[in-house]
Image 1 (cartoon, rainbow, N blue to C red):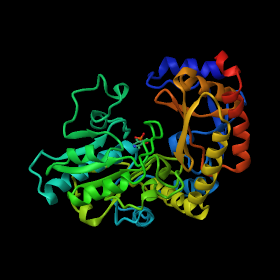
Image 2 (tube, protein in one colour):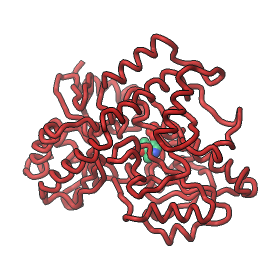
Image 3 (tube, rainbow, N blue to C red):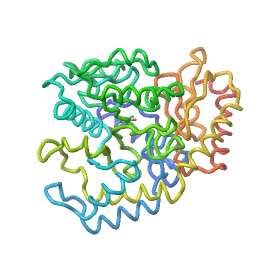
Image 4 (cartoon, rainbow, N blue to C red):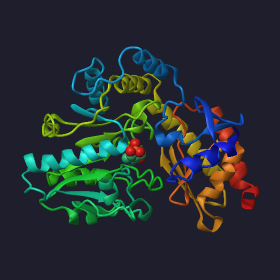
Length: 405
Ligand SMILES: *Cc1c(COP(=O)(O)O)cnc(C)c1O
């Protein structure tokens, strides 16, 4: 079947909850993917940062296949021989003490909400059902009914009510507005250190430090959603480390599964995680041996291949190259490490137009919030591969042909 036949089949039998670019991928290796017509593209999205290691990383594939031949699913009714090591190694990687595994990012966010509320009742002493969590305008934390309840994106929210109460919204980057929202019932502040889906929005320097201080002063948990920014993507192990702060809880996902499986977790302190007791929360597949084996290897690859340093070096290079383009379509280029947003001027049209033209040139990326194109290639990308992409990006951003689309 060719591209159009696959698309027709997908549109006929699949729900239309996405509007993908018209490219049907069949194979992948490293930063490269191949479609069913044999055309090769560079993957500059990395499945929203799930593929920090690139596609088919040999060590990760080996960890997966080795574990496949041993034991895959045990449920948490029993222990397995991967889970204890996964918890220890992830806790150490994060500088935390205790880990609770789930599968998807949204499930980990839900877990952080439940843990924060339980902590507020059991330890902080908030009256039953009064706990509040402060989130931010323009956030993205996933797609569950509770999570979309505190989304400000009409597309994510409208039509899915009634909404879960207990959340307040602060403008991202404004510390005095945030301060005013804190009450004795505030359990936690849930924040992305850089808003990813929101358009690669980097908060003002010093802001996360101020948020940390605010939390400490008011006995409020700082919950850092690093599902997209974490695990070396931004040129630090965690993006919040740019401000030398330590949150009370990390929320992790995406790259934690090595680009092979959905694996997520929260990592926190013993003092907080003690509120989670047998039977009150869980997941059939969370902590399964296959996931744990792959995630353990993923953490090792990040360290062994120096992917933090690599993301920083390649990110700085890539960002400089993008700035050097001086394209008259571009309003701003921003980001950290290999999480880069290129904002298109409104008068030049929507980002999707450029994304389609880039696809035709062999560079796969995705627009977010209409005007922003996100570049987030695998962290293993080389200078030569960035140069290859830059030639195509230059053609699209500095040539006229794009206007024909
Ligand atoms: C992608 C994402 C999530 C949700 O992860 P899923 O695996 O899609 O449920 C949560 N938080 C952030 C910051 C994300 O980027």
